[in-house]
Image 1 (cartoon, rainbow, N blue to C red):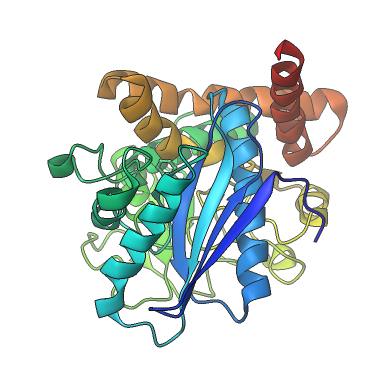
Image 2 (tube, rainbow, N blue to C red; image 1 turned 60 degrees about the vertical axis):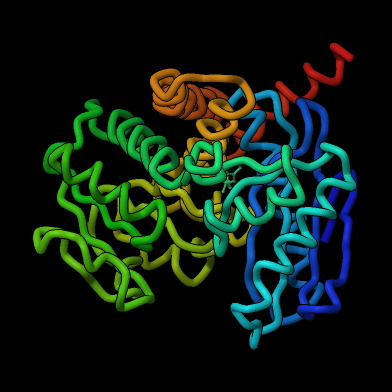
Length: 345
Ligand code: PHE
């Protein structure tokens, strides 16, 4: 895979059998900052590729959001039989590794890690750890902040499609009722949208009212709706799923939704408006890092996250004027900020 990043740092954690990967993609706008993902991979190459691609996504995320941080991501690739008892030790050793880097990489919670995990990482890795629990001086989970940004993005998509930001009566299908999907469903239903969701886990979404209909995990693709919101893992928009979509727009929180770059064209060819993932899902990282590193109030964080809706308006404008996909337009916007920053230096 072609990767134009700065460094991929790697350490084997012999005690737990895990592999610690820290990918630093860009430091042009500020110190590399991104979540810590904990997951099993088929092999070390797959874990490396994921870390690098996610770090690159963070570069674009911060740049498109106009936030002074660089792109980075950590992956804790654990063996499939990883035992819960090994977890705190691995997290602490990872924290010590981060501290050795002296602030070149900052982190927060991501898929497979929680605020509680950040507390443990911070025992060794402070002050480079965001999204610890409030009890430990952190700003807590980022999921609800991300969901607020996704809701603002869905409004922007509706404005483009229907001429109104109102979600009343709009049909939204949410893929994944997890840390972002669940609060998103609550926000959307409160705004009068009709929401359906699918999840691979039978436990997910148990707390939701019956008005929020559960559909099969694979049914989410073909379900007729106004907006499809992928809020689970990445690469769900691909040559197999895009022909099945029965939505007018896609706007969700998952990182790296497009399986390949051509999938942006595939969506456009089907007349589906795609809201680029790295613009839509910046809310959690922006709010938590803003509160913890820039001293923002929660009100300020809320305003900044809702402004993602206006960033998307601009992305859709650029796409229309330049006759390019919204994904290409968002990359152009981010790249402008990155080159501007390297010129100032
Ligand atoms: N999960 C966040 C993301 O992908 C990572 C993050 C959380 C970064 C909190 C900083 C603070 O954007």
